[in-house]
Image 1 (tube, helix red, strand yellow):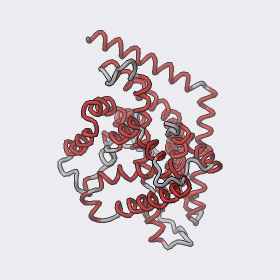
Image 2 (cartoon, helix red, strand yellow):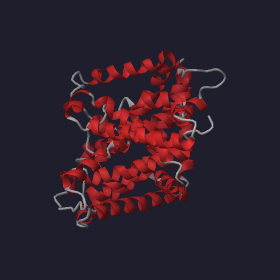
Image 3 (cartoon, one colour):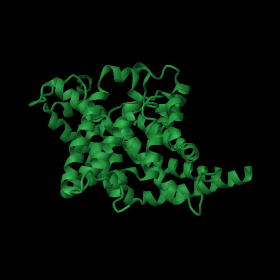
Length: 381
């Protein structure tokens, strides 16, 4: 392919997604305003809530990009010399390295936020004694969203879903290699094994809603679908073709946003549209936004720190500085404060990691753990 969906493009998309995420968590519903009166001028409240709630496309976007990136990693590291599937040893190595990498990235934000909350604010959602230790460990290791145990920050549930994505990748990749897009039918049934009434809006939950992003990310990464779509032209005139594609795909994207909000969709189609909409959204950004020089650099910068911004932003707005955040009165001021404060904390966390050589330590732990699990696997075999 002449133009690939590159790491730089991924950073740009992540940058847009993290901006959407902060808007969504700060302003999407009246309940999120913590009882404060916020001015949405020049928009009426109804339209503001509609727009900001629609920005939860960011969640599926991150889930899709995770699966997409993991598939590219698997293809480059494990599918060599004609190999076309993950054996048990490969799967064990992959799961160990990716899980440790995720948890090590989370560790410093977790410690900082928890220390501030517990020492400076006397906030303790974990309980006392042995229960405190167990609940804290579940939160630290990203298991609270799966086990239903208390979390210091409510949005850290996504750590559990990130672990679900990693855990399902090897088996999903192997299924895809065997039955192609038929893997999608497996994911149509999979949620029913978790909840028999899954295909009902009332039963949707964070651990199942975006599962379909996993096989979609694998398929799009393996088949270079974004690249093929971008290279596709409608007419021989490149400019006219680009304009037509922009009009068509913008209409498709807006329709998908509207369709997701309809009552019938919520009751019958939400599982599918929750994952399909982010794919359309990512393609639209790749086709029409990622190539804009100045904006792409700005959002790639945001994307670089998107993980830490995610870890920090809800802590700032809902735990630590809630009163100050929503006393700012205007929607743009609330967003600007939370985003800038989160970005500053994210940059500080990154500098701290570099200062203590955390990334090198993470690689060391990952490699040692991988070798250890391989030895266990070899002994078992």
